[in-house]
Image 1 (cartoon, rainbow, N blue to C red):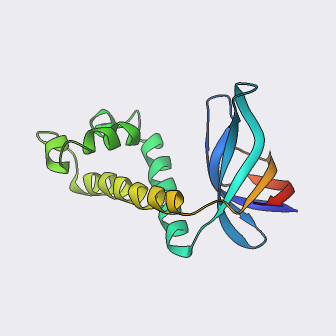
Image 2 (image 1 turned 120 degrees about the horizontal axis):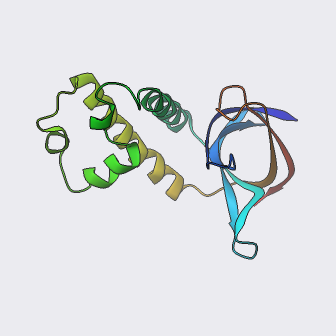
Amino acid sequence: MIEKVHCVNNFWDMTIVEGIADYNDKKYYFNCIFSNDIDDWTDIYELTLLDDYIFELALENWEYWKNWLKKFNKKFSSEIPHPVEYAKTRKTLTVDEIFNGKNIERDAIELTEKYYQNEIIINKYLKDTKPIYKATGTFLGKIDGMDTKVEWKNVIKI
């Protein structure tokens, strides 16, 4: 069965490593399994069931991420750190310390911090919740999480 993909994270070579997709009318976080034997990603994914709250946070963060990418080369974009860099810096500095002296709209600062806080909640949930299934994933369509579909095959309950 072909299922909807809500958002994806992929490498430069378009290998899909994680995201959110439907399976049997429920929302799952999926992550690609890396094989040390072949030193590469496989086409096998683990699927972790998401509750509605975590699903909404993940969609919110996906929207932030897409907007951050669109603004990357625009005015002041260099002053809004990459989300991964922000997370590293935020572990040792406050929001005000990070943006001190920068001419950034307060809304942009608040969105950046909200993304960071959402990531903490999402990652804690995923750490505390075990995957339910392993499956082979074949992705179809654009790799942007909007027009992408996935076909889960060889689904095994873990």
